[in-house]
Length: 385
Image 1 (cartoon, rainbow, N blue to C red):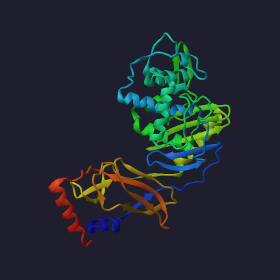
Image 2: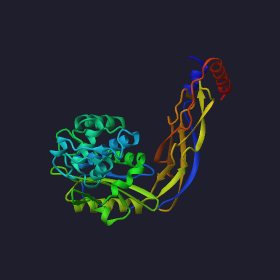
Image 3: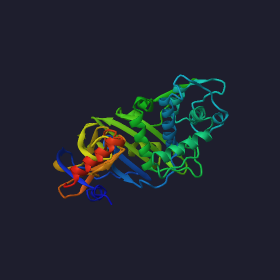
C-alpha cells in the first residue's frame, strides 16, 4: 500500500468547531391531533417538528395529485407542455368519477386553465387530461409517477392512477407526501400561487376550493385536500408568515371541518413554538478540503442554498457547530457532492440537528504531467501532517 493511500485511510476525518447563539422560544408540547397520521415541518430548514406514524402506509386519496402536479410542473419547466397549449379531454377523462371541472370532449381548453382547475377543486377529468397530454395515456403517466417517486426517494409510495381514486396497491405515507410537497415548493415557486386559487368556473359552473383554510387564514397558500371512504379526509397545507414557511400533512381525519381545524392547530403550534436562524448564506465557503489526484489541490465546501436551522429553546442558547468532513477526497468531484456533515450540539453534548455540506466547485481529475506533479506535491505536503 502506498504511503499516500495509508494516510487517506488514517486521516479520514477532520473537525471544525464554531459557536452560534440562537434566540428561540420555548417549544410547547404538541397539541392533540385527531388524525390517523400527520407530520409538520419547517420548510426553510427542512426540519420535521412533530409527526405520528411518519412512514406508515396510508391511502393518499387526492393527495396523489401532488405527484401528478410535480410531473406537470416539470413538463411546463422543460417546455414539453406549454401553458397556452390547447388540450382535449380524453374518453377516460370523460368517464372518470369524482371531482370534475366539467370539460367537454369537443371543447379544447388551455393547459394553464386545466392545471388551475385540477389544483383548485382536485378535478379528476383535468388530471387525466394533463396525464394524457404529457405521456400519451394515464397508464404511461402513472409509470412515470412511480419512476419519479423512486428517483426522489419515496420509499413508501406506489401509484395506480393519477387522480387518487381508491385502488388496490396504491399507497403512500405522510413522510413521503411531505417530501413531495417540499420539492413542489422548492423547485417550482413560480407556480405556488396556483395552489391558493379559491374558486374555478367552467361551463357556467363555479366551484370553491375544498381547502377551508384558504378562506380562514390569508397566510395559507395551499396545497391540496383528499377524501376516500376508507382513508378519511386528508390535507396537505402550507403557510407563510413572518418570514416562516410551514408545511403540514394530515390523513384520516373525520370531516372536511376536522382536517381544517387539525391542520390549523399544527401550523399555529409550529409557528409559535419554534424559531428559525440562518446558519450560512448559499455558496458561502465554510472551509477547504484537500483533494487528491485533482486539477486543484483543494475544494471549498459549504451549502449551495442558504442554510437555516429550526430550534426550540427556553431563551438564549449557545450551540456548538461541529463540522465532520472527509479529508482528503479523491477527484473527480462534482459541485454539490456531499463531503461532510455540520452538526449542532447543545450544552449537554447532544446533537440537535445536522445538515450535509457539499462541494461548492467542480474538481476534475488531473491528467498527465500535471497529475503526476499534483500527486507528488500532495504526498510531500501531507507526509508529516
